[in-house]
Image (cartoon, rainbow, N blue to C red; front, top):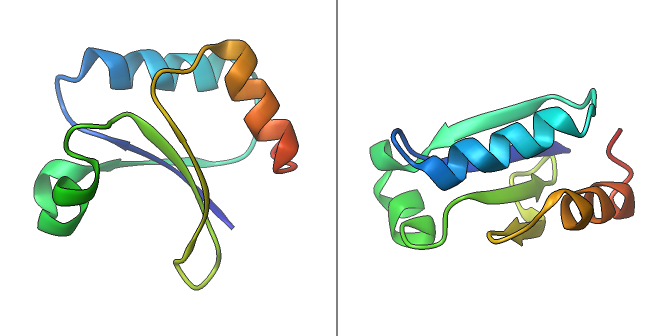
Length: 84
C-alpha cells in the first residue's frame, strides 16, 4: 500500500493538509505528488486538491480522503485503514 498526498506548489490548503498529517504523528511514509506535471492527475485532481489517496500495490485506488478535512477526520480515516 502507498499513501499519497496529491498537491501542487503554492497550494495553501495542500500545505495545511500536509501539516495535519505531520501533526498526527504517524510513521507511515507519505509521498507528496505534484499534479501540475501530469496531465491525467491534473485532470482528475485539479479542482479537488489536496487529496490523500491510499493505493494498492498495483496502483489501483483503495480509498481517498478529499479536502476539506480536519485532524479528527484525518485520524479516523487513517485508523480505518490501519495507518500508523
